[in-house]
Length: 341
Image (cartoon, rainbow, N blue to C red; front, side, top):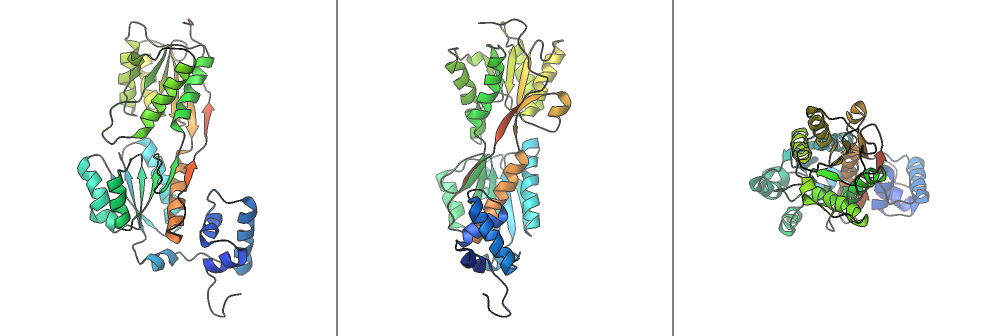
């Protein structure tokens, strides 16, 4: 029981349900890695004690700003805006402000770890940016709690998909239809050392190698995860002496550009060239794009919840959350007109 006149705290719920404060926080926020029976017990305790989370509790405990910073490689990408929407929805409900900034240069990286913006934030969500050991140490020394999206870490919690498996699903689908000459649009040199394109290229190559096919680097073309990049990559691939019968694009936006390049040459999708993307962009259903679905908004919402959980218990064990993926077969893939071996 609580003392007369004292509000019920999260510690009271933890004592009543026989678990840690961190577990109570995870259970009530709907975070993963909580047994169903434990979650139910915590919820019953919270209801019985009439516990209502105090939105000011984290600020009182930390004495800080109730502001979260979010670092992304670009502010004009569909993927990053969707992640941002997921983050903002959760933080707003919890009474936090969100500050977003682009990390598109070395000087921006320095500002991320040393600038006043991050130093006055309670936490930082980094999206598809791989921190060095020195950068992680600088954030830790500043007391900034970190959660990453798209890049795993042993130092802090992360949210990501299995990007090798993403590519494998796409290429396995094309192989099952009879394609053997499969182009790749999306990897390329990245100054921010982004792991996703490298992992997806590995998955693409894994499937070809398991099928006994020779990896042909001529069929791999950078596209920058954009419509324009997809068009440019596909134009190069389609102008080869032996062009691909199918193209795996590393994002749906890239796939839209690939399709445009196919149509610009008077060719048909999928009769002449099959196309697979990644994301399940809202326009993908409109154009009938076969894609590998990932709930991008969920990336952001889970990351925000993991960060809020860290505010409650800074010593909580880091969590690696894997977002589910699925092949969504629509109208842009079919058997090749001529099967090549």
